Amino acid sequence: MSFPTPVATARMFPDLATVESRSVTQDDEGEQIESWGTRHSDIPCQFAALVPASPRESELRQSDQITELGTRRAFLLGDWSDITESDRLVITGRGTYDIRGIERDSWAIVTVLRLEDIAEEAS
Image (cartoon, rainbow, N blue to C red; front, top):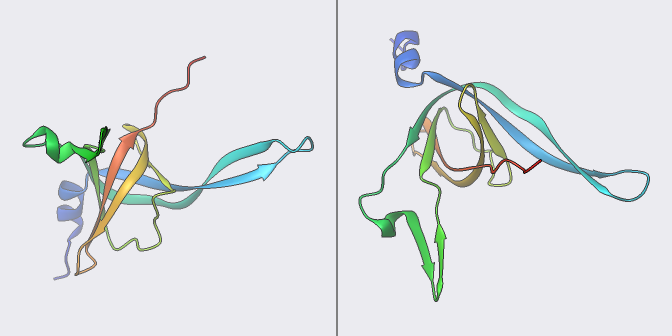
């Protein structure tokens, strides 16, 4: 029996994710145009909104500045060693997130991404 079985995969990783990578080109006037292309698609994943045990676990404190760290995680099935913090993650039915941190397990079974919501631009 191989791990994980299809039934275990569906239960443990019920969502599907797409990793997008950023590219920048210039138009005829020299303006930069940002676009996103698919790096990986249909990755089984588990999405989690974590509640920290204390405020300090979700903050990075440096001198007089406090930066809120991403409190959402995506657990991707597999070792996705080419994903970087400049990529973003789209989870079907949930939204698009910037990647703020990456952790890999030593057995290459799961890649964990720390995520931050992408703010919607005002129209």
